[in-house]
Structures are given as structure tokens and as C-alpha cells.
Image (cartoon, rainbow, N blue to C red):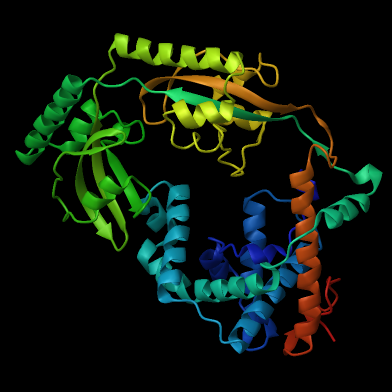
Length: 451
């Protein structure tokens, strides 16, 4: 349904392109426009153009004009934010810089590869970007004042949909909503005690000089780090469970934590480095292996739930809230959330990317049906059972108000926000100085930037 969504102006997404430094090296820089006291440099425009090429987006002879209008809008937002004395805090700027740097380093794979590419450390790169990010956050805050209070009524949604020509109504791929009820086997106290004693023995070996990286590779049950010797890099506070944070952010480099328990099992961690609110640490997770009889008990518990569901003595949402061990879905009617969109709706190709086993299981279900208890592996590597439920399946179709109301609502809201934004631009252009270089005066802009 992406074709129904109308972006207000692409600069409003406030993406800081990672090509900026290299573009500035290759472009003979000059000022190509000024809004208020804020210049637009040719290097800014070229950086965004190169980013589009790198992401294999379609470009044509009008692309630079469109990018220029995006930048003009961004600078107008900034100029008005300065007039209105809007502010962003140093903490907000630092948080945004950290977020962006985590993304960039993730794309490169490591700090070392990032440094090799740019010829400077991430900390030096952050310093170069600080003023730019502050301006972007101010512009974002100004745009929020324009659109945040805008909403659409049911009549406006219907009217919007009625304006779409019949041959332009978008085609919707097949979509599904899937729920789950998870039952994890209960670990016997003796098994928990044994696993705690074992990880304590590993801790003592580290304290005596053995490498935690080697021990993590051999014994850690954390699928996200065991292959890397337990190493996690640039982990911000709040990304992991609170118990992990509590130790990671109080240790000194090289120090080893006590054994501590989390919902995932027992951990020890060794701090490698800390940079403000981010840490590098080696982490070792251990938990008791599940006994076959405990797995059988979990299955039998879900068999009982399946009977209740089949007899319609309880709804799936009620059963999930009452019986499921999965905190991420039990309070959401049991529905699995699509990590790509944040909604509970999956396109068929997306559900397979998230969990291929789910895609296979629901392929045989009719809407409203459940699977029997099925074994599966949780994201943290533990054995469990679950019942899957197919709440909804739509066939490929042209968009309509009955089946696609939320999508059409979002598109109608985008359109109303865009109209409000364009009205704001026309009003503020009368109050702000704008000058554009001759090279861009032939552009066919949406708004009247040139008097």
C-alpha cells in the first residue's frame, strides 16, 4: 500500500547522509541557495544525490531540483525555528549522534572498517556532524509544530479515497495476521542450581586468567554472541535487560561481573570499553538444558489450551493473556508484531523472512484456525512449544475501505499534513529571505521559492 502513502517532503525525514564528508572532498563547493541566514552548499546537494545512487534509487534530470526543494524546506524550517527561539538540548544532539553512529558502524561491520573508510574515528566524525545534527533536530521540531496536531475524520478518509481515480487505486499484496501462545518448560530447581554453579566455575577460570572469549565460544548459549567470543560492541544503555545494563555500566575495563540471573538465564560479563552511554563487553550466557519430561509437560499444557480454543470456551486473545509465556505478544492478543512496520500485519514474503516455520505452518490453516502445539526455538535459543493462530488472511486485491481502512487513513493523513505544510511554506516565504543560484532557477518547484 506504499503508493497510497504521501511523504510530506523527503527532507522532513531528516536523514543525515553518510556520504557527506566524501562528497565535500570531490565537489568544488559553493553556496547554491540561502534561506534566512542558512546557506545550502553544493556539497549538501551532491551528497544526497550520491546517496540516492548508492541506494539504487531512480534518478532523472529533475532529481537535483527535487533535492534542492527538500533542502530549501529544511532550511526554511530551521530559519523559522531560530526565529521562534526553539531549542534542542546537548543531550538530545548526543543521543541522535550516537544513534546514527551505531547505524553507520553496523553497516561497515566494525569501528575499524569505519575508520579505514573515513580516515577518522567515529568520535571525530561525530564532532564534525554535531552542528548539522542540531540544525536537523531544530527543523524536525519546527515541522512537528506544523503537523503533530493534525488528524483526519472518517468522512475525510472516505472523501480522500473517493478522489483516487479508479485506475490509480493501488494493488495490495496478500497479507496475514498471526498469533501465538507460547509455553516454556519449567526448569527444575536442581537444574537451575547446577547451571549457576557451572557458570560460577567459568567465572573463576576467567578470574584466574583464562580468556572469557574462549569460554564464551565453547559454552555460551547466547546465539547472538557465542560465535564472536561473546563480544557485543557499542551497546547503548537500555538495549539489553536491566540486569545486564546494571553490571555493564558499573564495571571498569577488564573487570568481570558476578554471576547474575535474568529472564534468559545466568550471565557473566567482562567490560571491554565504555564510551559515554555505550559499552563493548564480552558476555557469557548459560542456562540448564531442558529435560524431556519438562518439554512434555509444556506440550500437554498447550494441548489443554488447544481443546479450550477448539471448543470456543475461550478466545485466542484471552488464552494468550492467561497462558502464554511470551511477554512480547501475550498482552497484544497474542499477535506477532512485524519488525519491519511495527504493526501486526505481514505481507506473505515478510512472514517468511521473520520466521520460516510460521510461514509453513499457517499455509495450511484457514482463517480462525489454530495449529496444535508445535516445538520451536525461542529467539534466545531456548526450547519451547507454541500454538499458532491465523487471525486474518487477505488475498491480493485493489485497495478498498473495508479491508484497508487503516492504510487509507494513513494516506489521507499524509495528504492533509502535506497540504498544511505547503500552506505553511507559502505563508513563511513572505517572511523569510530566500535566494537561489541561477543554476536552479529553471527548476519546476512545487512551491514558489523564486519571486
